Image (tube, rainbow, N blue to C red; front, side, top):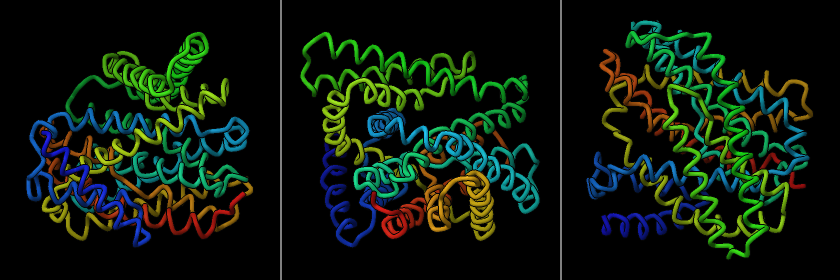
Length: 393
């Protein structure tokens, strides 16, 4: 395990530097590293690390969402409130149901299986999108209209809809008792509970940090531990009470910023440093989940399904931004920002196969292909279009 960590750190830093040098998002180098040294490549990564890969990726995702929360301003959030709500569900629903209909027709699979495929693919990747939006916020690109915050807020809830609807289709297939109306009602409940629990964590952190003199490094570790506990509560209550814990993590950071800019600035600096290591682990381990051979099995039809799904998502983005003051370039940027797939597809792409779904291998293949195609292209598109079309404030 130690040797694997050393390889990930040394080669990850080197590849990030190379990709930055050629003006490409650095995380693509780490993603490529994971593919090369992962079990479907040279198989250098220790099996022990792969066994805990899911937990390590979740912790890294928590770190980036805390950073996002600490960087969101109330005025900006108010400005993008209604469009953010629309962006959190409309594009994903358009993409998911389009792929469901198209997949059923092209592959000759049942609507339920195609629904699973649609909503695995429909989830946008916060792991890819959030760091890029934070870099734009740091540079004040698009902040006059709150565009990076709009994407941040929408992308953080987008996964809640996708995973909930995927779970509904999976339940329908496996014959489990599924109350569809209750599942749909569970989405706003999970969002509200996530926000509430995040606020509770934020209140506790502010009270603790104000009452006791604690070093900033220890404050960051305490907040990280509290956020991990929050997501663990979601895991324990899964199937009983739905909680959007990752949204809660971001809300905790937002509350801390609201109540104390001094504390939030200090924490932001610490989490920026923690992210250097967490980023390496996140993208290298996401890359390690990618089986390129499996991806090729979906062939041209798989690529067609992904592309048409993204077109449907883009139409959803246009509808979501109606009535805003965004110009056409900024709306196109929002479409591009919603392209990348990675974390959710890597996490649940194999679930249908493990559940014995006949088209499980096909679903996994298209999920992997979506990562390979959309993560690098989306990231490059976000970086280039954002720097070109978003106005520095």
